[in-house]
Length: 72
Image 1 (cartoon, helix red, strand yellow):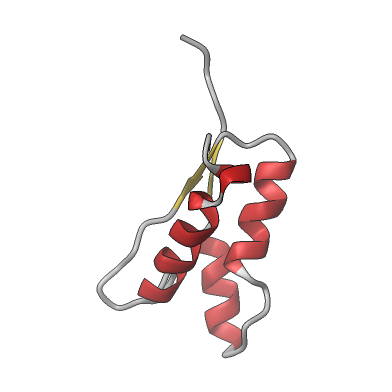
Image 2: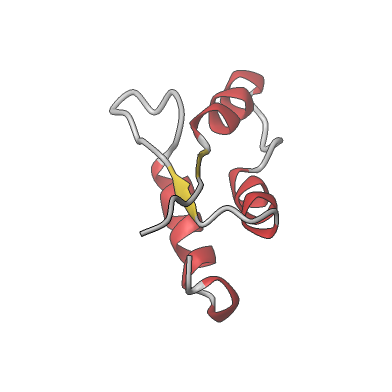
């Protein structure tokens, strides 16, 4: 078994939420991480939605269900 990299995107979402905008995009960050070789994407939703929001989880699920990302 080999070690693989899974990138946590919570801080990307925290930065976006602190600016009250859509930038930076959690999905675009996930695409960048995957293209750079990450084998996984990690998010930890919180009840207060300070980081990842439910919409982020759905957007990431949609991204990762695409055939070109299905092996992540």
